Image (tube, rainbow, N blue to C red):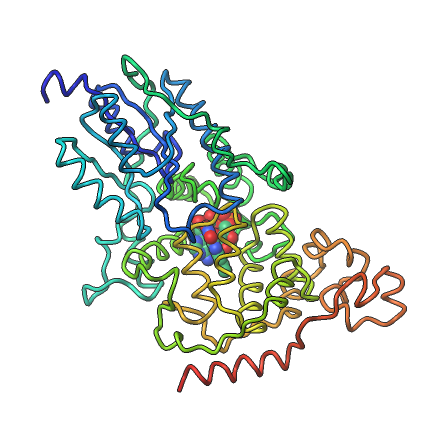
Length: 482
Ligand code: FAD
């Protein structure tokens, strides 16, 4: 390295890796000894359907503020720009004389396309582009099945992943050398990522603390108090039985490698190995989703199994709206949709129930549910969202069979036996006893009166009848099999 390139700054482009620890791109930039200029670009080239939704924009605002303050504590800053990523980087290179750009690779088709464009345009100008992993445990090109092809089945995938383990995680740099002159930065507030009128984010603020430190604290607390009971409670939406790390992971405030090592270490220190294994298996599903998205980039848009392309979906805006607003009349479905609307998150078991209801009871395309989740989830993640919707639809890789049609009443009674989850999000039904809270339409007039419920007024009649809806779904599926 020449003297001039040592003093020329390095740009570190942050994307979905809004953290300082376990950030190989940042650590490597810092290790060059060059001044480091951390940059975040609010891009305008992500395809419209996959621009951050409302809940993600709210989270992004908080997360960027937190990252900026963590960088300031190390004598650095976060430079904010908006526009076309390539153009913004070229401007910054010209303004700062940077010789290199360090970044964490992405797996979304549009991120990969961007990386391809950056490679040619930056390298043509003599600027080195340095790409690092960090968003997932193992790079998708380096895992293949016995035939040398991408995995399509989870269990052998997870076995291969577990044998690899996770790469080590670099600590956050203590200090970051600052450039002689900082380039101009946008003011975060000018991006209007947070809602104003109406300010619908009150429930999100009450439920979440975005940022790297909060993510680390949540992991530590979960390992200490939640992990031992994870296998028993992870399917009970009325309890705090899962880690709720998903939005932190989606924004890269914590990396899966940190989680992997921390959970393994807890098991080795005498913790419950089965619980650790059960938890890492779920992290493994996230990896599998990324593996699928990388090798099958059409996953967010088209059925993985092509025979589903001809599925006879319905078009019913009223039913879709009832589902979105939590007004289907099925308490577990409506509680889930309201948890999503209020807090930007929904328990995994209930995600499966509401998705199955949309796809199978209402026969509405899984992509409409995928879009709604994209807009309303704080953990919206292209790989996980697409793979999970296709899993429920039966059109995905290693998916639930299409004919497995959840009965929302039985799901509620099994996983929310005391009705705590429904009561928390559906106050209209809070006074019904557990035996009726998942099927208020079966209650006697007296039981309804005592609970203050009037069917069709304070609580909607079910918008479909389960047995008939099931038969209709199976008939539609027969069409696929032809
Ligand atoms: P935990 O049970 O504590 O699991 C730990 C981590 O493992 C999660 O944070 C997540 O990163 C990963 N994980 C857990 N379950 C799954 C799973 N089934 N598939 C993939 N990864 C998993 N997850 C998202 O992160 N973003 C999404 O946009 C998303 N959309 C979904 C849509 C549908 C229809 C369904 C059924 C599931 C979806 N999931 C999505 C997966 C799962 O519901 C969430 O990851 C999980 O509920 C997050 O809560 P947690 O962090 O407490 O999970």
